[in-house]
Length: 230
Ligand SMILES: Nc1ncnc2c1ncn2[C@@H]1O[C@H](COP(=O)(O)OP(=O)(O)O)[C@@H](O)[C@H]1O
Ligand SMILES: [Mg+2]
Image (cartoon, rainbow, N blue to C red):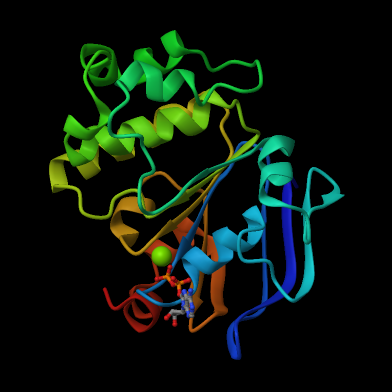
């Protein structure tokens, strides 16, 4: 197990948001955290990154306790974070956006990223801000990979993208998995996430209400309807 979140409780001021939440991710797995808007997906990912630290519980990454550590220390240990709002730098070129994100040496290089996202190679001299939504999402994922993380946290990568682009993104996710990437992905779009994830956790009002293999979840339309409304 590379990531173990054990019984965390998170608050924003007085409001209790995550309730005894536990989940784990094995090396090489894609695990999805599914839930409606407001369920607590972003808060969970921000908690792992140390941006919204839980008040209690434990988070271990590669055997080391990380709850209470500063976000930059957690990133340095090898966790890449792709936030919901796609933090690219609009007036740097695609190539510059990728280059400044490079940190640890490893399997991911500029060339490797261009290989899986050829569109980024085509646009390498273009400013980040001129890219389409789908291209920006590729760039944010590319940026996270440039730091050669052991684990990537993706927050709703499909949000706001056209259906054809979402389909393409699912293809990229399968390529990343083949390359051995370990991923925890938060999504509202379960039909997207279930096409490439191994296991799923369903989140409702800050509590995990179901977890298991994606193949099992696909055979449970009543669970999907109840917790995800699909
Ligand atoms: N900065 C904040 N301050 C107070 N409440 C917040 C803040 N961010 C999120 N919340 C609340 O926490 C709950 C979980 O939000 P969030 O983790 O963003 O859910 P999701 O990502 O699943 O849509 C929601 O009820 C939301 O209104
Ligand atoms: Mg969110």
